Image (cartoon, rainbow, N blue to C red; front, side, top):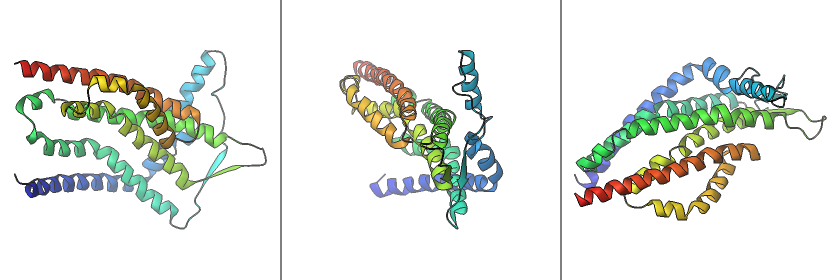
Length: 263
C-alpha cells in the first residue's frame, strides 16, 4: 500500500473509533441519574466504599482518623451553561473510557498487518492486557485518589469563618482528569513493550534512567493530581511498581529477539 492508502485506511479506523465513542457518550448522556448521582457524586457521600474501608481499617488498628460524619462543602454552578457543559463533558469522558477497548482494537488492526508472523504470535493478548491495565488505572484513580482528594481538599479549612463552596467545574474536572490520567499512566508496561519491540528501549536504558524516571513520575503526579502530597504519593507508588515491571517486560522482549536471531 502507498502512503496515501495507509492514510485512507487509518482514517476509517479513526472514524469507527469516533463513532463508538459518540454512541457510548450518547448512552451516558441519557443515563444522567446514574452517571452523576451514583458515579460523579459518589465520592461526596459518606457511605462511599473507600471511606467505609479506611474507617474500618483505622478502627481496626485502634483509631478513627479516617472516620467522619459529613462532607462539609457544597457544589455550586456559577455559570448559566455550566451544568449543561459539564453534562456534555462527563458524557464524552465516559464514552472514551467505555469505548477504550474497541478504540485500541481498531488501532491494533491498523498496526498488525505491518508485523511479521512471529511478532503477531508474540503479541497475542495485547488488547486484553492493555484493556485490563487501563481499567485498573481508572478504578485506582476513582476509588483511591479521587475520594481521598475530595475528603482532604473538601474538608480542609484555614479558619472556621470560611465555608467551602466548590465550583461544579472544578469538582468534575478533578475527577475526570485523575481517572483518565491514572488509566493512561497504567499503560506504561505496554508502552515499554512496543518501544522494546522497535529497539528504542532496552532494560539497561530503563535501569540507567531509573532516577530520572522517578523524578519525572513525581512531577507528572504533581500535575495530574490535586495539590496535596498524599495524592501525589498514591499515584507515584503504583507507577513506580509498573516501571519496575516494565524493565522485566523489556528484558523478556530483548531475550526473545536474540533467540529469534539465533534461529
